[in-house]
Length: 253
Image (cartoon, rainbow, N blue to C red; front, side, top):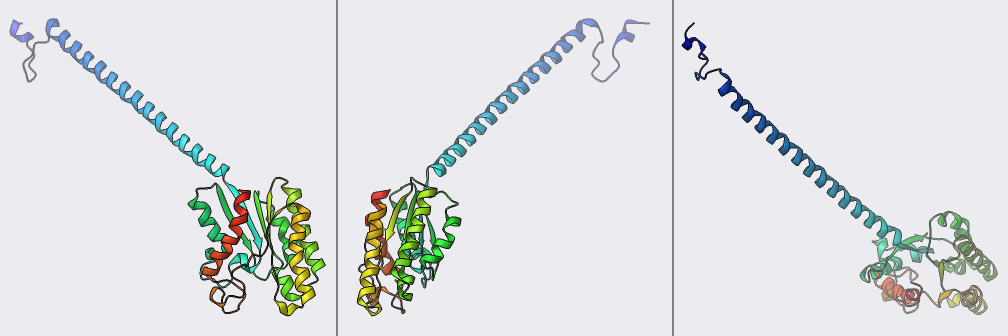
């Protein structure tokens, strides 16, 4: 066998002797190790970025949760005046106007409108336990107008309102209460009109709660600020009603 027979006959004609083979193996090994280091480094960076993203996401979630948990609830418990009867957009009723005011001042309160058209004090007493299933920080009580228009005895109206107040205080002792006073038309008779008007300040004093003397002050009896029925405020009238309430409510926030 000649020396030439030891030459590699594969394309490229490289010799398969020891001195040429080792450098190639070494280079391959170095390249493999270099690639492995790159992969491990990239993986470590990816894990670090993922961990950072996860931490940032968790921080944002915690911040949102903290904001929600710090938000307090103002619940308006009433009849059609609270519900916004006859308005194209119920949010134009005075509780919604107050929510806009609160938002503009960036106060941590959300308004819950629990008004039901046609509600009497007896009806309100019947559903108050269900309403109190949610935590309430400020309770605004607007009931009695329908009692007055129906001529229900003032003693009965007063008793129902007191029972509602008692339930709120028993369930949430730290809740602040605001009572919205109402009046009835002169056609109900002088004695009834006077007794009905007086029951609200009397209840407020007895229970040591805030009072809006007359919810519809500046609106009641004004055709321009009331709907065709002469009872329910227009959207413009509701803004004035909201001011009447806000002047007293803001002190409790």
